[in-house]
Amino acid sequence: GTALTRAAIAPGKLHEDLYALQGQVDALERMLEGSPSRAAVGEKAPPTVEDHFFAGFRGLSTTYGPTPHMKRSLGIAADMIKEILPKIDALAAKLPSLHTQLKAAGAPYIIGAGER
Image 1 (cartoon, helix red, strand yellow):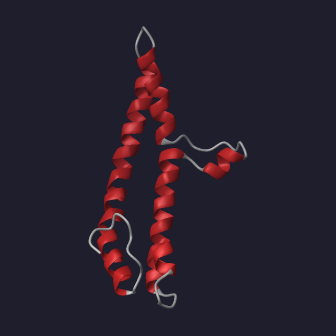
Image 2: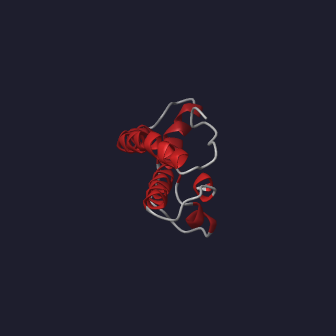
């Protein structure tokens, strides 16, 4: 977003594409970690990958090992990650094209985006 605001082009499809990409990234972060705004007001939210992983991980610190519930939580976390990974790969596949478009639009160098 910042690089695009510094490019000398009028709002258009590139802005829409980046806005949509940011929305997809935000949705994936909520699936993994939950909603920071919901957490701030103490609102109940659906369990996240982080919640399930933590519930299963607690079993590693006990002397009797993980309970069936803890194992189930880890299984749910693994299933959620399997669902999320293809979405992350799809987003990553869009980045080179967006980088090329930003560069063509005169956006400044983006750290971590490859060649100048």
